[in-house]
Length: 212
Image 1 (cartoon, rainbow, N blue to C red):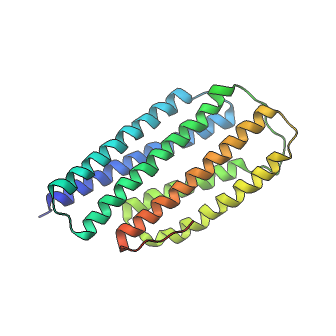
Image 2: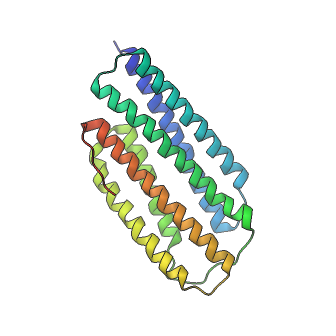
Image 3: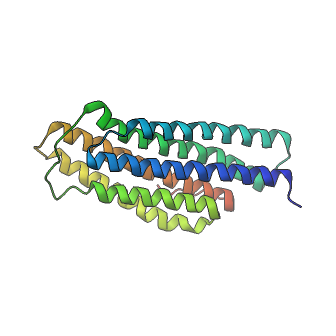
């Protein structure tokens, strides 16, 4: 028979996975709008706000479980990790909204004709990290952290390479600003993916590991 604590932990896990799916969808939508110069800020903001509300629900439920039950050390690690992960997933949604807000706030811009820029590749790598972090939440497979860390490290390399190349561009200043902001948000998305991986590793093993 399942303990009430186990049921509660399972429900929180379901909320986290829901948050993650919405956040990944929101990020894909935000990037699609950025590439196509379409203003989809209202829709992405709505998804981001939903993720924020779910994050608050996770924190409330986890706190209640800790207060009303007597969680063992392993249960307490999971609940602490879930609270932290909820924050990281909330940042997923927020950065997706930030990307979509660029077009909404600063208007249209011309594409930068420079083959050295790899923003789309950076976007796909960041999304891969996000998806892997959700898989780790679902499976509690802490061994995935090493593969995730390699992809996250590649996003850092692409971020700085794009930053350097954008600093040398002579195109539309609005486009340069838009691209600079977006690569920064993508780099931060990947960072939060690594934070989630670290939290899952801690929850599963009791050992703290840093891949940053």
